Length: 71
Image 1 (cartoon, rainbow, N blue to C red):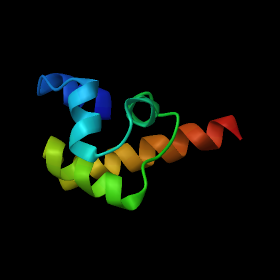
Image 2 (cartoon, rainbow, N blue to C red):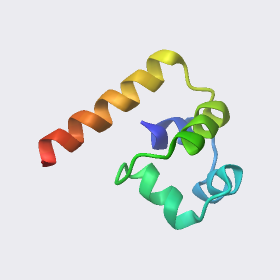
Image 3 (cartoon, helix red, strand yellow):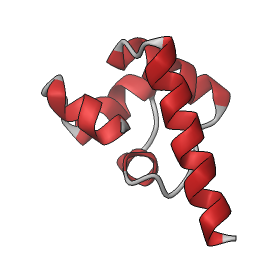
Image 4 (cartoon, rainbow, N blue to C red):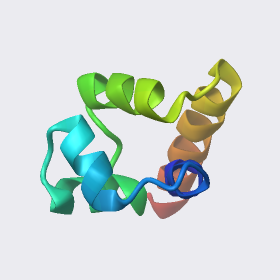
């Protein structure tokens, strides 16, 4: 969901990593939903991507659902 929203806005992974003040590698892991961002990074994602409350909830639910299937 983060990747799709980023692409809609025309923001590169490199630009997002820079905006979030994290490494490109760390951002790619978030973009591919391999890991859930820390709360400070999540806050910056919400602001940078202008996510609505509904989108935030959807992101969290989908991530949790995906991780529960793996376990």
